[in-house]
Structures are given as C-alpha cells and as structure tokens.
Amino acid sequence: MDILSVKGVSRTFQSATGGAPTLALQSTDLTVQENDFITILGPSGCGKSTLLRIVAGLDQQSSGEVLLDGKRITGPGADRGMVFQSYTLFPWLSVLDNVCFGLRERGLPRNQQVEQARAFLAKVGLSSFENHYPKQLSGGMQQRTALARALANKPRMLLMDEPFGALDHQTRELMQEMLLSIWEAERTTVLFVTHDIDEAVFMGSRVMVMSARPGRIKLDQAVPLPHPRHYSVKTTPVFAELKAELTEQVRTEVIAAMAAMG
Image: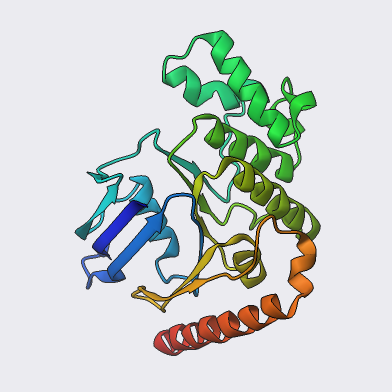
C-alpha cells in the first residue's frame, strides 16, 4: 500500500540579488509503500535534501503536490519524524527530556512520556545516559538520542538527511546496523538521503538515484538482499554487483554536474 505520493513536485529558488531563478528540483514523481526503507543517492546539489524537506513540510514546492495517506502535506507534522546530519538536540534538556519533547507537545501525561522515551532509549542503547546532557555525549550518542526522539513519536514516516555523515567510519557502520535492526523490528517507513553508496545498498529496500541539478529521480532500483541483514552481506557478489551498477549511475551524474559548473 502506498503511504507517500509525490506528484510533479518541483522547486525553484529566487535569487537574492535579483538574478535568474535557480531550478533545484525538476518535476519529480515518487511513491513510497508502507514499510519501505528507501535510500536516495545523487551528486551534491541535485535536490536530495530539498525533496526530503518538502516531504517534511519544512520547504514548499513550486509546483505539484505531496500526499501522505492521501492527505496533502502543507507543513510539518507529528506524522513525520526528521533526523538531520547536525545534532539538533536541545542542549538545556537531558537525554530523557529531549526524547520526551515531542510526546510532551502532544499532551501525553508525564508518566507515559517517560515510559515511551525509556523504551526507545533502550532500543538505541542509551538507557544509562538518560540524565546526561547533549554536551556530555559523543556525536554517535547524540544521533542515537535524535533517532530515539523521532521514533518515540511513532511517526508514519521517518525522514533522514545524511544522519551519519558527520560520524567516523566505524561509528557510522555501527549506526547503520543499529538503525536497520530497529527498522526490521518497528517497520517504520523510512526515506533516507545519503552520499554513501555502500550505505544506500546495505540499508535500502529500494535505492533511488537522482540526476544532476535540476534533479529528478532517474533510477528506482530494488535491493535483492534478504532481511535481517548482517554486515557480512557487504562481501557478497550480489552486493558488489549492485554497488558497481549504482556507482556508475552516480558517477555519470557527478560528471554531468561538474561539466555544468565548468
């Protein structure tokens, strides 16, 4: 069953100096099925994050419409959880209260807030850090807190904009495995933007490749790897073959983007 429908969505940005407008995202169609884990690849500046922000309701498309469960998206909502690359935690709140924040805004009694927040802190391995503050956490721990905060609201969709991009390689791979195991248990629909082809293949049930700016979805590729997935799947011939194919697709678009800038 389709949960998200993007129909003819484009985005044009006006110049701050009165110059010609920039078409960042050309007319784009996208359907996301319930329980999908979709990863989105493409060269820098192709509109990946713009598309994600439009789905989140943080940006407004210039044309087209976005429907979630058949209802038009006109702004942010609790039915979509967003995790950014930067650590967007409230520094004055403890880990527990950061995760409780959305639940509090929804008006849940404090005891229910704490119960749900602790359940998701346990899923991300931070039960013993609930009374710490963000500045006392590593980058990976801060992103785990942000993930727990997003999941605690039980959104229809989880939107992730290069959430592991600022982490070191080892921490990034551990975060990939943790998120995938949570998704395999919770089956929350995920739309995940990344520059990392290994990450896209390992995590995605479908990988979408966007063209150079103005971006559009040029390839929608199913990932024929079973679940649950173990990190060792990255050494299999199926993984290597799909990675090679996607690398060529993305490389072609990066070259096109560089040529357009030159």
